[in-house]
Length: 280
Image (cartoon, rainbow, N blue to C red; front, side, top):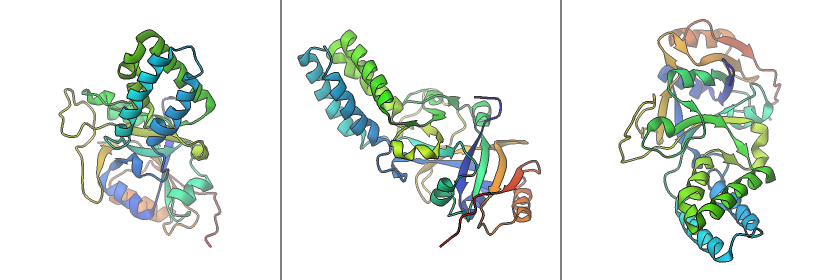
């Protein structure tokens, strides 16, 4: 990513005030998002289509059938346990779909954060993370993958090569972990206009990290289960801009006052949305 790369978090006025006061962003259970296929799509829809592709290859039927049986059983468990947590951003600052879905129908705000700030200040790598005893491997930021035939083909190719090289054991040596690795980022393609990028975290509840080296909190249970990451440290901050929704109750002066009251500084750019949404 470039030196400064802004991504946008659409929110209500109430959430905006909470973000300023707490100076953290919440990583929430991704399976609670507005996409009911979140996370499970990888283990159900994607895997089913990859299986069909594998069945058309030259992999011996006994090897493939045994591997599929083992993976099917594993994925029934995966979709019920250890969900990833995340905070989601859009790569576009001012679009109607984001305002109506997340920005309180233009009564909220769009907050511009420098995603690279989290890399340099919170130890969050640009990567698709996976469960790990090393915390910096269990959290990362990257763009969402919108399910496509091209991506299916890539995943099928990975599985094919693993099965050819490792036989039935490929399910535990490669395939299971590869799908887990992508599960926090694969989405239904109808959500593609959201142009999403996210920070995803795979916590290991009940197990201490062998190496804990990222600025992420322990599990919080107030309001809803979540983890927290700071977006400000001293005079350095990730928040770079605030875009005020067309129907927002806050004026530019109000936003500036809130920033000053919460000791955010005066260098945050404030602008008005050009999305002239009519509330009906």
